Length: 273
Image (cartoon, rainbow, N blue to C red):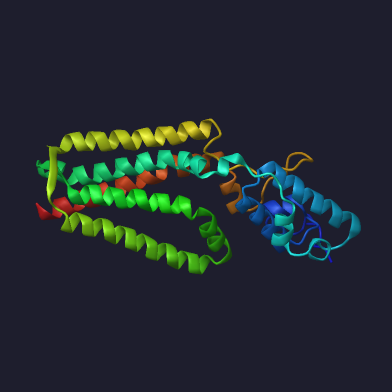
């Protein structure tokens, strides 16, 4: 049996799948959309494919699992064209503004403490080693992005634990490099480091904002070939579909985290002087 059409009295939120396909079983539709997303299919093609399933289920009163079988298997069997922008080079291009922001965060956090104490910034072997570890970590994320996303969406608890362990390992390696590889390489004025870090942070945020304005930084939305979808009644759905949320995530998260680190550094400096 198919899922009932949502009535006006139905208090449950209108998810994307229910707005596109009210006659299709919600869990089946979610798995179907998710698999096509992970395969890199464009949003308009995903919407068209789900609309065809919806049309069949609405006309025949047959449930999607009975008509099409397993959602993941059926999604793969469609062999829909894959968006070219899902290539590793495109992913690296999309991550470039974030990498610039992270570089600014590191340099600014390294320089802020010496600037407060009036001393120079010493760039050590550990600083360079930590930067290399961070770059390799980003490259690893790109390399295993597809299986990592599949694990995250299908086994969130296990993926969350592995992500936590990975972050601890990367952070531990960076800290160990700073503590053990303390041979100085360059010595510059801390104020110059603060200026360079702040400049990179601002440039990365501006780059991310420019990408969003050019529609390169936003996720490809899933659309219906039959016309505009009704608005989401879910707070989470409205948030995720909001352009302001995408802009805030891309341009403000790392600067906000950097301000938190600087505030902590300032507080520690105040308690030790």
